[in-house]
Amino acid sequence: MVDLRMLRERARYIILHPVRAWETINSEKRTVRTVQGSFLVPVLILVSLSAFLGSLIYNPSGLSILFPLIRALKQFICFYFTVLLSAWVLNEISLAFVQEKNYSFNFKLVTYSFTPLYLTVIITRFLPDLALINFLGLYGAYIMYTGISKIENISSKGILRYFIVALLTVIILYLAISWISRSVLEGMYFAFAGSI
Image (tube, rainbow, N blue to C red):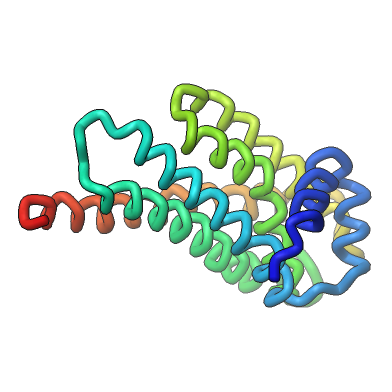
């Protein structure tokens, strides 16, 4: 069962107090599976539900009910695989910046750094006219920087380098996965739309 209160409080805490939030996150020692089940997947379900409802309500061209389902699936796939692949890539290259690999930390870093974007996407997928607020998702870069700065035994130059590499990794993977998932899923929909 998902604890919605914890989900709301974690998102609020990481946005309003990122430095203290990272101290809490690092001290609580939650596993990847726990973070995935208690935060990432529930948030992505909300993002997907918002995309579904927004596509269903704002459907001027009269597309079938499958199109909103595909839009919802695309949102879930895009964020989920961006988090997984970014965490994996950062884990693999982390030895250039820190003394040991830590997939759990990198997974949390990417997952929680996306929090402002998750929230803006929930709003803008339901109300597309507010798309400009997605720029508020850039606050996630600061959340990522504060998370990286909490790593022990890393120089200030190392923090900046790791931050730049992490940010570029997340952006490139997000754009690539978004393009691929949109192309494949919407391509399949329009290829078979005439037969539905």
